[in-house]
Structures are given as structure tokens and as C-alpha cells.
Length: 103
Image (cartoon, rainbow, N blue to C red; front, top):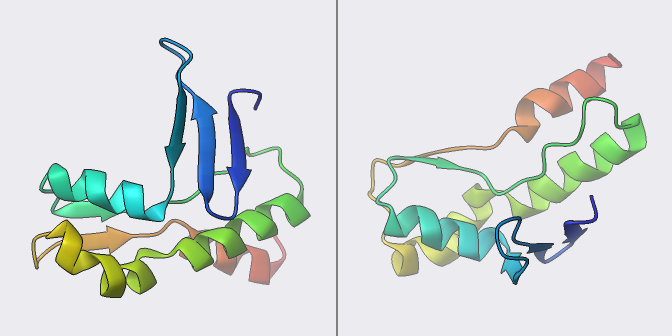
């Protein structure tokens, strides 16, 4: 966890290779996937540890929902030029269902 700091705007982290500081947020993630001509784009999100407490997981899911590409696509797709057949997958839907069920 010392390598990264998660904030509302994105994640600040240090490269494990050379230690340089890097920032990545939802827009940067979409731009990278666009540059790779992705046909399957992954949502920018945090995948919390399996040992994280319920509050942390809920906060993470909520943050992912705010970062959710469905909202970002409207703003960034023209700039990113993702192929029109690109599918975007957020992980938080499955986790949100589990949180609702109480498991």
C-alpha cells in the first residue's frame, strides 16, 4: 500500500521498476485503452483485498461507480476514439450485489 495512494481523482503511485511517480485516473485509463485499440475495455477501479473490511469495500465500490466508464464514455469517447464495438466492464456490479446480499 505504500506504493500507491488512492484519491477521488485517481491513483498516485510509484513505479515498482524505477520508483518514478505516476498518476492514473479514469481519463488516463480510457486514453491508454484507446491507444491500444481495445475492444474490451476494463473500468478504472480499485480491487480491494479479500481481507478488506466491509466499509472499505463499500467505499471502493462507490468510488468505482463514480469513476464508471459508462459516465466517462459520454465525455471521453470522442477524444479516445475507442472502437464503437468496445465493451466496457466494471467489476463493482458483482461486488455491489454481494454487498446487498450481506455476504
